[in-house]
Amino acid sequence: MEKKKINIAIAGVGNCASALLQGIEMYKNSPENVIGLMHYDLGGYTPGDINIVAAFDVDKRKVGKPLKEAIFAKPNCTTVFYDNLLDYLVTVQMGAVLDGVSEHMSDYDEDRTFVVADEEPCDVVRVLKESDAEVLINYLPVGSEKSRKILCSSMSRRKSRIYKCYASIYRFWWWMGKEVYRKKGYQLSAIT
Ligand SMILES: NC(=O)c1ccc[n+]([C@@H]2O[C@H](COP(=O)([O-])OP(=O)(O)OC[C@H]3O[C@@H](n4cnc5c(N)ncnc54)[C@H](O)[C@@H]3O)[C@@H](O)[C@H]2O)c1
Image 1 (tube, protein in one colour):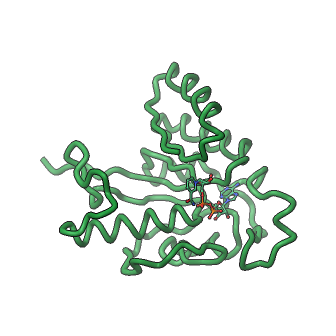
Image 2 (cartoon, helix red, strand yellow):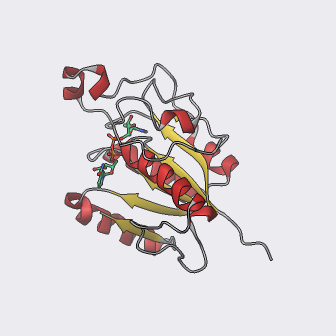
C-alpha cells in the first residue's frame, strides 16, 4: 500500500519557513547527506513524505505569491542554501493581522520589517479544509497570541493536529494550550 504523505500548512512564511522548505528539498534530494537532521527516518517517514499544501502570511511581498518565491522575499534573510524548490502549487494566503505586527516595526526600513498587504484575510478554515491540511506549523512572530488563537481554533475545527514553534518564554503558555487541546482529543507536539 502506498504511504500517505503528510499534508502541512504553514502560518508565517518567514525565515523558519524558508529554512524548513529548503531543508526538506535538500534532504529529500540528497539522502546521502543528512548532516543536521537528527533522524532522517521517523517511523517510516522521511523528508520526501512531507507535502506543503497551504501557507498564510500578511506581508505584501508574500501574500498572493507562489510559496517557492515567497520564502525568499524580504524581509526574510535566511541563508539560501538550496533553491531547487518544487512548484508547490501553493499561493500564500492573507492571514488576519491582529497582533502579528507590532507598532514599533514601522520604525524600520522596509527590508527589515513586515509590510502589511492591503488584502482581506482569507477564510482560514476553508483553506485548511480544501487543501486537506493535517498539520499546521505555527511560525508566527512571538507575541501573536490573538493570531495564534484564530489559527488554533481554525485547525481544531478541521479536527487536525497543531504543531507549534515558539521561543522558550512561551513554553508555559504552550503547555497550557496543550492541556486544553489534549482534553479535546487532539495530538500536539512542540519544539522551542
Ligand atoms: N528564526 C529562528 O532561528 C527561530 C528559532 C526558534 C524559534 N523561532 C520562532 O519561530 C517563529 C518564526 O520565526 P521566524 O524567524 O520565521 O520569524 P520571521 O519574522 O522571519 O517570520 C514571521 C512571518 O510571520 C508573518 N506574519 C506576521 N503576522 C502574521 C499573521 N497575523 N498571520 C500570518 N503571518 C504573519 C510575517 O510577515 C513573517 O513572514 C517565531 O515565533 C520565532 O520566535 C525562530
